[in-house]
Length: 287
Image (cartoon, rainbow, N blue to C red; front, side):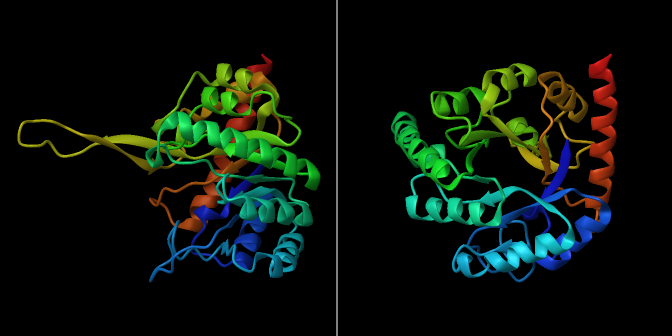
């Protein structure tokens, strides 16, 4: 396995800082966040993120992205795109950029379930992702669908249904431990087996369900929060045992959105922890 970081989770660093620090810490790769975002007084994961490249004018920045990545010695684990599957012009641009960078694969986002009737959203997305697969083939890259809560593909079963019959050389799935804590979790090994050749990429973060304050009648409503890798509800060891048992040996991209520990310390510790987990669970799987 090779380990990278998605720069959505490094909002305080410029691209040069992100690449340099991650390389110095020993990460193998980087997954750049590319999207037009809102400004913010302070850098945040989703707004004002300094390690994000804007979609507007992207083509003029590709040489800089390639140079910064190359000079750091990091590899591309993929591109963290935000173009939705029905935004064909932007999807085409992201596929072309991925090909030009030699990044191999790029995320194409799915519709949220609160934007329409599920059956209608799913049918339209199937047509869109079939088109994206054809365009990805033309560019020699792969379009990725992430297992993501509150979208039409929160689970492996939903993603498999969406992609079934399309060419797995040019369309695949990002399996995501943390997102599945929130919605869509199925027994991990079974879900990997279901995806089969469509399993293209893995994201690792963690989350926890926490209770709110009791209401007047005693009702307690729970909500999810991002958590450190060690303490969230997702069992990282069990996750890696399943990956080993399935035979997955590709990229594992960390996107730790917890804030308990300062960013530089957090990324350093995440790498040490992931490598330790991967090593001990590989030994267990082999036994």
